[in-house]
Image (cartoon, rainbow, N blue to C red):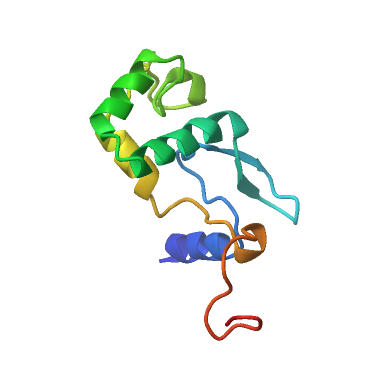
Length: 128
């Protein structure tokens, strides 16, 4: 119970609770105090955007995974991304990897202040 409460507290403060770093992110010191936070890894964010664009353009996950496996883009499980734990020299991408990458809820979402194109929530000041 104490561990889950501590993890909940860290998440509410926007801090990283540990574990495997999601693809497209890296761990950095918290600029607002103690602990660490997830920040966007610009090298990995580009392929994530391209994957999302292709999905929205109705490309199949199988086709995207095949193209990524043929490219020089390391997969989330590749050893170049791992500092500890299981390592793999495989650059193989899988449809399940793509699906979890695009649907994961564990990744911090940008706030409305960071997304100027987003409309304010209903009932908020300035909402129509």
